[in-house]
Image (cartoon, rainbow, N blue to C red; front, side):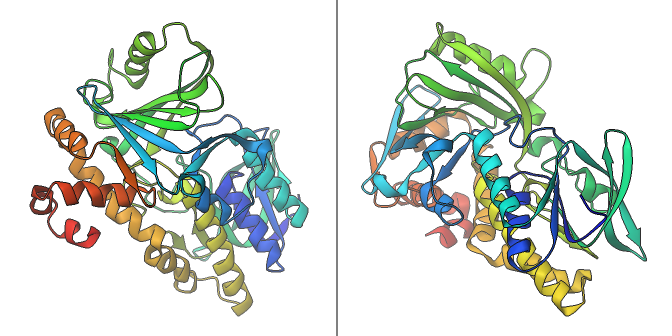
Length: 398
């Protein structure tokens, strides 16, 4: 690790890896600083991503694909099972990744392109001059080193301490933090090619429970509930343990992963003088599904592209870097985040009886293209009353 780079990337996840790789591809020097001793661990993600979304950034590789999905299912609060299949399932559904290997692959590609990588190196404070972020103080095994940069890209995950130190309000309301727990389980009876989601206030209040297969008889079994619903005796782990005891009484848990996911709107602004914020740190997780891998890679790449352009102009002010903020908000991804936030807010207010009614109404769908928005469109089509309940949002979806 040198003491000066064009771009300093805080965080070695998908956003940070794509940012560094893109930056060096633009002719810039870049370094990834990752606080953990190993890239990709611990995994704090259900690990699902759509096929086309993944292929926008990297060719699929069997080394880090645990399972290929061709369908999905939703279990209503009353136990009714809605099967979702796609007429184009072979190319339109998705993969369950092995993030330990996937994240390392992304960072390896950044390193091969020319980026430096420093693990077990924690950014402990920004370097600021005349209001500009000019790099970071890096703690490696107790030794503090100043690393300066033209632009710092904060991709340090949902905790996002670096952005906060730079004066950005990163507060997430408790009700919009999904308290999550996931087990990696084996020796369980599952459909190895379908993701299953369970809804209902008795199962996962203001959230959902998921089964993401990782091969034969092995899966990520996890849950996310609203932070405001969590408390002594009814935390996410309590709900998950109850489900596992009933559904997989003989299953074996080989990994336990607690964490939190923000399901709020993105930060009001994702840039400052000399700073760009990407991935979970920018709060660009899909508020409806909790998915964030694609959004992280998209914003990471875009952050480096804008950084390169601004560095080339000799202007890394907030005004110049705002091209990044405007671009992702205007993108298909940005519009989906805003739309899905409103859908999420609507759904979490519904009683189980309403959720049962909606899910029963669209049973056995066969969508031409498998996606969240197409599912929502079909739900609105067969439930005309939702047009009035969703108001202008329904009109924009249709």
